[in-house]
Length: 409
Ligand code: GUN
Ligand code: FE
Image (tube, rainbow, N blue to C red; front, side, top):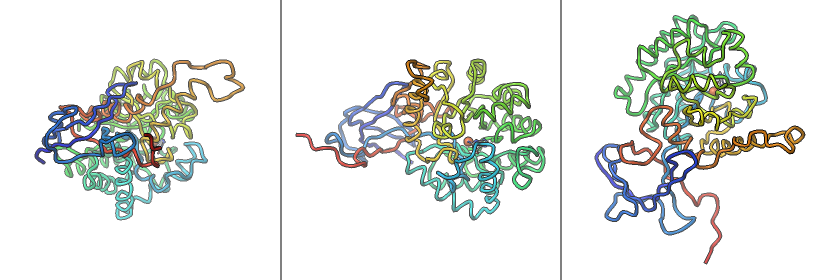
């Protein structure tokens, strides 16, 4: 890869609540890693990003966005079908769509549309659910490798005879664990060093999996060293279902199956209590906060500030297609908006005269941090911030795209 230098104005969020701007920085990159950054640096460079000649022109350099939660096969239904609650949405729309990915040629057409679309939205790293099909899921990892997107790609494990349809499930728990093991092996063959694409163990969620499959996938993660992703305490129905079946909250149930570890990505986690948050902190597991999806399925706003103050690792996800947008920046904006609605309450009859949660709001700098470094820290990956010692993983964000600024003398 060699070495090169580029000049750009950096905008990033090194911690929640704080933007950092590095004007006219010269960034030296060696073999994909940032070797040095000099603010206002002089000298020759290989590339200049954006014009640095004044407000409203050109582009700034932002750390690449990290989308912690994407259902790749749901891309064809993005922005549709959100009229049903989660448990009916899965059976009526989503399982039938995912079952089509038995056709690997069709899958590749979807992947070759999805991955460039996410890259165009600034998502340089994505954590994907594939389908139950090993071949389609390997093809997804290959699409990420071909298009140059960093990715964790998981074959979806699901075998529960009551919570999955007979025509879209692993035949047995043993079959499910074997298929996930085969998926890990074939994704690792694509990228033996794990520079760009890696496998991730992916039990869909507790309701869709038998205890035997969840236990087997926990063991598979331990044996292979692969990270884990699943859904946790997403909605009233899902949270209650796990309590009824397991007698404990989702977080505890997942822990009992060996699925909570450093780097585990728990989508949603809207309905966590204090003990759940403490357990996540203890195990090093993180949350993929998906504010747009939560507006449809979550039955409430994720108490983000509480999670951060408890020390839980948090990043952002689009949850394509439970969320109707492929843009992580839109989800960052929705993070701010929904946190303010949580602060003030949403029903004027109930919340008039009171501010239900005065400390719940987060600002735009926190949202950018979540979309970049927060997500990177959930995964334990040296990205998310432009500083020496991390990978050079960045996007140029045009600041003049949405119309021109008024001319000011
Ligand atoms: N829980 C189980 N499967 C899914 C899914 O595909 N999307 C969402 N949002 N939640 C889930
Ligand atoms: Fe999801």
